[in-house]
Length: 139
Length: 139
DNA sequence: ATAGCTGCAAATGCTTTGCAAGGCC
DNA sequence: GGCCTTGCAAAGCATTTGCAGCTAT
Image 1 (cartoon, chains in turn blue, green, yellow, cyan):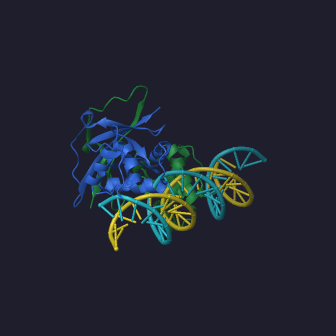
Image 2: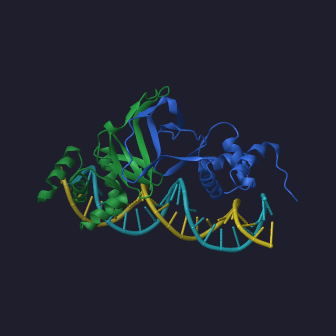
Image 3: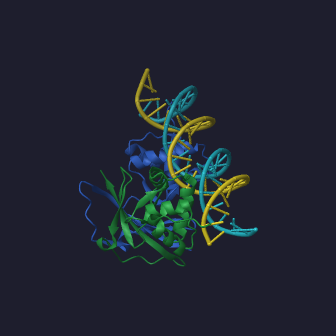
């Protein structure tokens, strides 16, 4: 017997299938939260709490698994601004970040707002994977 | 009775005193390693191993303490490139970093090699503490 | 049917903390 | 002497892993 997918999960289901991921109940909930309404910055814990707040039943370990699976599938991107806590960003286009050191809040900076000129050449034998600009804010 | 400071620790001792830190045996060893010969990038563990390799007797907790005390005193600067591991840099002048994701190695990029133009304004009520540019390398 | 997921709990890795003993000023 | 440091071990987080049971395809 095939499971009926609720209408609000239709978009998430298609996105998961397109990425080659099975449409499990937990992934649908997380995908809906992550991709359902605009760009998001989440940590494993914040996403877990948000999902739990929506009444979803899933474990923190599954949230970690899904975040990494989504990242590997190219649906998310990891942002490193704080040793000890990984952030995930649903905005995949090139851009940078403001980071409020006090609150841990992350905010996008459109790529057009920063120009990185004269990028240095990668050292012998290395390729540049990505350039991250983090503007750290105090107060 | 006052302790005699070995000649090779003279410079380190003065640096600690200038920063308002007591010249304990452990701090002298760490300061000598960190500031004795050119700029360094260390993690707590790498510094601990290096000190232990030089025959110094000190605990990992003390290395953590000293790294934070040195940072608070303005002798070091923390670099965040990897969630889960803090790096410390003895180079205090403005500059940026190459990060080899495979090996975890960090390498300085002189400030003059990168131009960050058109820095965005800090959001209402916030001040820019610092701008970090991290060039992530693969291979 | 079966390969892939999930959940739980235990394990891991880095870092911090509490507190008694020791050392600098 | 008094206060700051150290050392050890235990505690603390965030994250990962092992494995039995479940589920999408």
